[in-house]
Length: 102
Image (cartoon, rainbow, N blue to C red; front, side):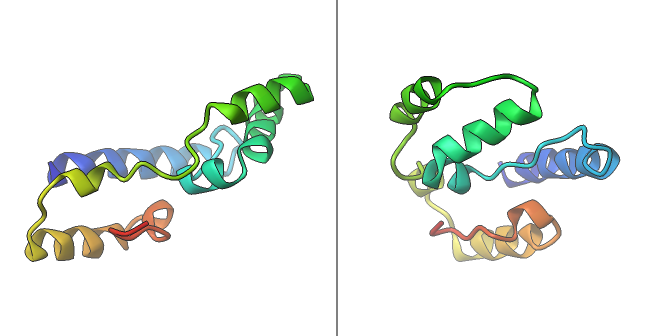
């Protein structure tokens, strides 16, 4: 499970390094999306060159979770696994904001 996750994180990082500076990737964070859904949706639409009106943003914002769903809490983690994950997260800029609690 951990190895698979970090394989995907590595692939994501490779895509970011190749395409982010060229404007071909829009970096979003789940927490930001939940905290400011209208602003984030507007940013997505702008990036995709789509027009979105206030009703669209309001309707979409209504169906966004009010708090993050922390599915990792449904797994029993050993301290060793937690330490490994936290250590490996430091290698990825897009994961540095996260902990096991957030």
